[in-house]
Image 1 (tube, rainbow, N blue to C red):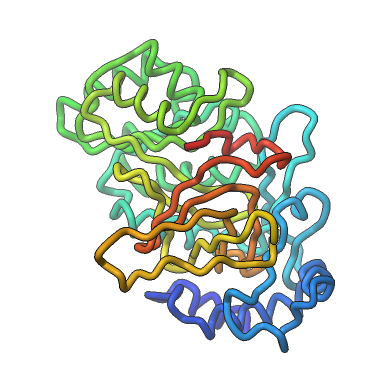
Image 2: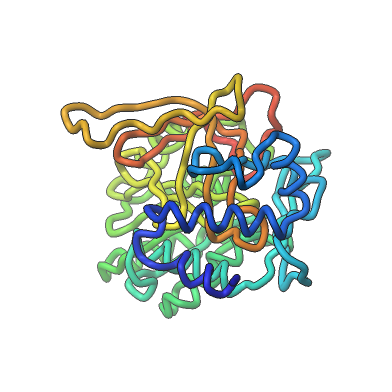
Length: 337
């Protein structure tokens, strides 16, 4: 059954297939002991789940204290959140790395086309210097797939990075620069330059190196120091095997097998009705706390209740507005709108 579900997950238009989502919920309820106990504790067994909005969403903090596994297996890899000093980090056990690679490569191609069209550069100090980072695994694989001789990780060597970017600019080469927030700001201040044909992908994370700023302020500063560049963002986390991307319009969009729902802040079991996309006379919006359906999480849990406040638009795009009061600050996602 698992292999059949994986095939269906990465088929086209998957997030419109309600039956598949319900089948995966039933599969995880039956094969994930932690998720089953949680579902039972709130009265949401499969006989009471008729629609995706009825599905129980596992609080993301469970990844800090329990092994969230669907099925019995020895993981090929496990990912660990970066966190901050003194925090307990989340761990996500990955049964097959091939599923993660399928997710992030298909997602990248959906939003940015073939990796071979880009020179892909990683400016990810602190992530690169520790083990079990899902972000480093993803960027490393995209670098390999790009096949460009200048693709790679540049760590703290800002002079070499600046020289590379200037040389590629002259050739008209498309560039995608993945960067952790504090490193991008350091580089922007030390080496401001025009960056045409370049997408800067900020991935969040100050790591205590700088004072926290809003995402809007970050994008404004990067745009000022790198005129001509497009400033994009990634919404990803250790507990998910998929990512959403935010382009120049300021809204994140999900790949086909990932979906955002919002819940009431004061009633975590109450899913808010999505904006009506059929009303094209205006852009309808709702606000709440972000729940994520990520079907790539087939071997852990596909239904995650995050601690992020969000805004959902009728076209399926969403914004991240910050953290719920009293929730842990996450090392990989400290920015607010």
